[in-house]
Every structure is written in structure tokens, then in C-alpha cells.
Length: 365
Ligand code: NAD
Ligand code: GLY
Image (cartoon, rainbow, N blue to C red; front, top):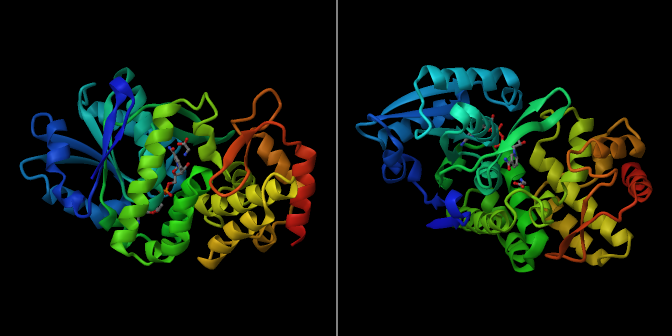
């Protein structure tokens, strides 16, 4: 299956098929120069999946750059390391570097390629559910710096995305759930039918049901491709909708130190519940819709109550974290609110005092 990201001169295909990692030659061989491809990955993914990729590329020598796994790798030091290794390997602008891994590898390699020789090509081969349904598509690349997460980066689209749902078999369930939160997000933004599909099939996606996973990935990629084609650089309040749950989530992630205590996708799930509850409390959406969102996510084992995080912090402190969000503009935050399931919208009218009062109630449990 191929989903196209329609971006004119920067358009690219997303190839989705089980077993694709071991049969990637039709997609990747055209990018090999002199019988060589450079692959950047992390140690965990290298141990589990690099051999499969290599076996499907007979006659192509893979040069590999293997980095430590984890969010800490998305930093200046590893960016420099990747750029210098790629230069030492003689990468040219027309080459395409392969990013094999989760969102950390995709974001880091994409950013390195955006600046290498003023921009070289790269292919995303995402191996987590989160990266398959979200981060590998759309060209946002970044590293984390002392001032905050993803604060230094570039828009740099890949030339192709290659998704093999079979690689999810080795992904820990917790990481699978984190990615699933981003799947549900597409339903909550503008597709009530897809949210209903999630209610019926979410457990199957998390239990490794191949057909359910393929449907979830393909549907999510189609949804994201449409958003990116409409608003590549998040200037028209279209791509901003993808931030549903992220402003609340960001506050919880910041308060837990962007650590494994709360994964990004877990924070997004918690944040989406808060966004719907706040919308309901402001009379924008039916309380029954907010309860339905919470019921689905809680039913799958997500933490949906801020009180359950046992944070030792005030609502004011959470709001303070929100104001450091890079999407803050002219002193106001753009909140993604909802008029119902599948009816999200961008609002700059939400008063931070109302958010603080709302969060105080949520934190009290
Ligand atoms: P990750 O890349 O850290 O992967 C999570 C863990 O799973 C890692 O330990 C990794 O080694 C391991 N792993 C990867 N594939 C595996 C597999 N198939 N089997 C077993 N283990 C595997 O995290 P992630 O959740 O994929 O991505 C999170 C990152 O993505 C964050 O840095 C976030 O900022 C970024 N992000 C970017 C965008 C974007 O649009 N660019 C969107 C959302 C998130
Ligand atoms: N993950 C949000 C975006 O790509 O815009």
C-alpha cells in the first residue's frame, strides 16, 4: 500500500506492508550510490532489525552509524557525531541517508540531513508505532536543548517512508500504547468514525493483531499526509490540530522531567482527556463525549487522571510549563479544544486562569 504525501516538488510516498523491512530493495536500492547505503539507527533496533534490512538488500553494502537508544540521544553531541560521521563517509547531497528507528532516530537524522551540505536526502524507516503513525511523516525534525524539548530543528521532508508493521512485534507494550495514543488522536481531531473503529479495535492493535495494526497505521498516515499537504509549516491552524492533548501533555512531561516516568504518548493520552474535559467544563462539548474519550483510553490501561501521577506541584506550575510551549504567540496559547468527538478546533480564547482552576480540580482527583 502506498500513501502519497502531496507536497509538489517535495512529495513522497509512504510504503506500508508487512515484511517490507526484509524486502526493501525496490524502495531503497535506487538510493544506493556505488552499491552503498548509510543507515543510522540505535543499538536496540540494530540488534533486532538491522540484519533483516541488510538481508533484503543483496549487493548493497550498509555503512551503519549506531547510537545509544533513548531521548537523551536527541542532543547537540549526537547531532554533531552524526553529521561528522556522515561527512567522513563522503555523503553527497544526492545521497539518501536511511533513518532506521523510532522518533528519536528519525528526528535526529532528519535534522542532521537538513543541514548536511545545506540539505541532503533521507529515508524514514520508522520502527515504533509512534514513529510509524506520526513522527516519520511531515518533515518535522529537531533535537532537545537545555531550554526545552524540540526547540532546535528544521522542516525537512524525507524522500520516502518505509513502514513494516511486523517490526512492532518486538516493541514493548508500553511503547506500543504510547504510539496508540497518537492513532486515537486522528479520530478525535476530525474523524468520529475512526474513533469508533478505535473503540472496537484498539485492544487488537495493542495485542499485535496484524490486520488491525495495518489499518491503524494506514489510516493514520493518510490523515497525517492530508494535514501536512494542507499546512506543511503549521501556519494555517490545520497542522496545529495535531497538537490535540499536547499542551496539557507537555506540562505533565515537563513536570516529570521528560523521563521514562511518563512517555510522550502517555502524556498525549492524558492530555487529550484533559482537553475534552476542559472543553466540556467550558460548555463547548458534551460531557458524554469527554467521558467516552476517557473511558476508551482508561479501558486500555492509560493513566487518565492527573492525580494518579502523584505530582508534587500546583496547577499554577503546570500552567507555567504550558507558557514555555514553543507554540506560545503574542502571550497567548493556542489550545486545541473540542466541540465533540471528531470536532476539534484551535482556540486562542482560552484564559489561563480558567485552565489553572480546571487543573486544580483535576489534580485534587
Ligand atoms: P524512541 O525513538 O526513543 O523509541 C522508543 C524505544 O523503543 C527506544 O528505546 C528504541 O530503541 C526502542 N525501539 C524502537 N523500535 C523498536 C522495535 N521495533 N522493537 C523494540 N524496541 C524498539 O521513541 P518514539 O516514541 O519512537 O519517538 C519519540 C520521539 O519522537 C520524541 O523525541 C518526540 O519528540 C518525537 N516526535 C516527533 C514528531 C515529529 O513530528 N517529528 C512527532 C511525535 C514525536
Ligand atoms: N506531531 C505533530 C506534527 O507533526 O505536526
